[in-house]
Length: 209
Image (cartoon, rainbow, N blue to C red; front, top):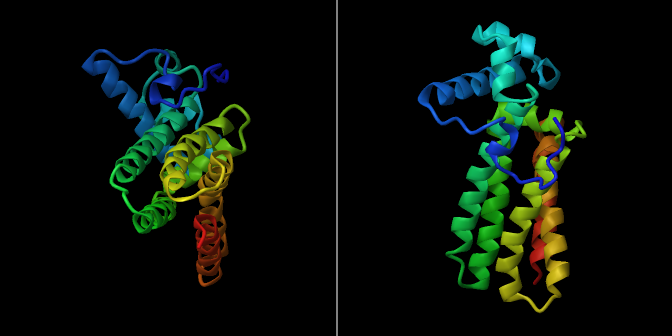
């Protein structure tokens, strides 16, 4: 796909048009589900119009009427997951009123992303492929940026550090959470668990004494 100039992180960014009829919405969901199956079975490179057509019995023309590139369906899936996590993060942030709650908030979010990555094989395959694809790499970074803004807004209330410094630390933490989860999965137990413990040490350092 051509990288959107606005880089708006929304599932609709990757669709030719928003489905307005039940039939169009059903067709989109069928394609997203098929792309998810292909991701798990054949990996990111396997998400092609031919593979989607074989699984859904939709002609290529129908697929390209929904998305400009079959990989856009992977982006739709990933963005939906990211949106759900961001909504949860934002909701939790609104309930923080003390420094102790801020620390708990950050640790809950980090643990939530670790668990999501461990449990969602589709997301793992999607992120692995998109992070290596220049046309889609921006998605993960854009999500990290918006999450970092929410986390930084919480932490800023309980520190005298410069807001820019706080944001940059939160951005590093947000973006490295997924990378750390991927490393832990690759290492396996018990090495992977120790890597997560070391990342927890870094989060504690971020939050300060």
